[in-house]
Image (cartoon, rainbow, N blue to C red; front, top):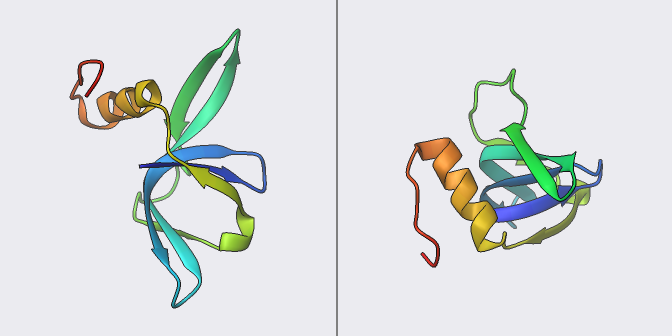
Length: 89
């Protein structure tokens, strides 16, 4: 799972596949992170009107990509699968 900041300023957390051959980044199950004030963050589906299939992003629109912190990754797993992982896993 990766945390990606797009050139639009949006941040998404998702599964990522990089295809250097065609110069594209394919993301699966992207979740949009929304600042909610006072150090809180909200989450919603990225492109809620799409069919949820993998999305291909032009690498020129990616500012950076990094690993999410453990707490954020656990929250996304709980939100997308219903499975709650204990801290430290």
